[in-house]
Length: 315
Ligand code: 3HC
Figure 1 (tube, helix red, strand yellow):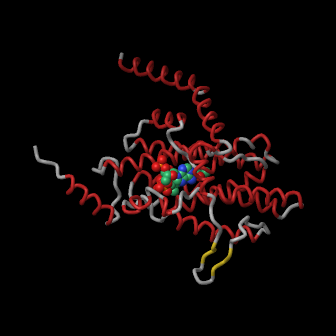
Figure 2 (cartoon, protein in one colour):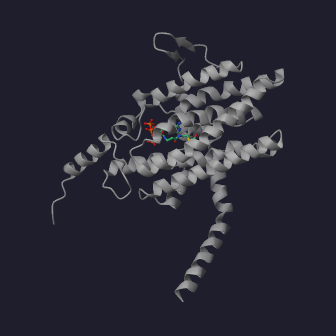
Figure 3 (cartoon, rainbow, N blue to C red):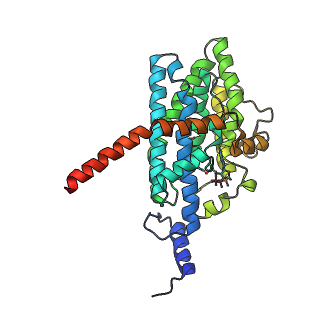
């Protein structure tokens, strides 16, 4: 049997990456490439699913039928994004049940942002405008990710994220240009969501353990800090346009660099939330665990029906 030369396989693999040739499920790939993609894609999927919870809290309290319909459509989109991404993880050999159990056991991460409470209707606007706005920043480059199924899933996801971001900014604009109480509600919400939204992009490049390798493998096309900076540069003018103040006294346009300088992120808070000690971590994971238990009868019925059909076909 011919000796498999791993070095040669790795060289050819990196050559494909360098030549922008997509890696497909049946292609040879380094174990570490597979592992880091399963890690990132499954946690991305968990973020989409858990991300529905803060918004679900406001479906019955939306101010009118139109807002309720738009919010329901967005939440439904997020569920679809999650299923897309769980399927992308399965193309790498991830087992769906195990992946979901990892979320429920606390072993797997999901985006820190979803561990903050949604306290007012303005938060629905902030989540759309800031959270989906940040997600778009980070997901558009993923459309050019070296792994084919992930890149293709992102193309579909990003189209829907744009709608999510626009509807959020519309909610916030309405409030910011409404009565003094509505404007105050929007400003109070921005004060709470601004810094956690910057944390979505991950630790600083100096503290990111995966960025260097993910850039070499073209899983990432930009670093965490580059995307965070892009988000600040785009979002600050949007806040100013509707008369809201970004809660950062160090925020200042820098003519020299052509970017906004901004204050220090509270990384202690970030790592506290990432390690499970955020305001809503327990509640979020418990809600997902309960959803699985409550839905068990549907799975059992579907499996029983599938087995019966298979038996009838075989007989
Ligand atoms: N929340 C929770 N954990 C985070 C995090 C965050 N905001 N940022 C980083 N981390 C974790 C990483 O997962 C990693 O831990 P791990 O090794 O146990 O997985 C550790 O912190 C070190 O961070 P790195 O920057 O080195 O890790 P990555 O290279 O994976 O970068 C990332 C982190 C930028 C989030 C990257 O994983 C990524 O781009 N993921 C895909 C996009 C995504 O998941 N976005 C989350 C929001 S999805 C969303 O908002 C959908 C919208 O429709 C609502």
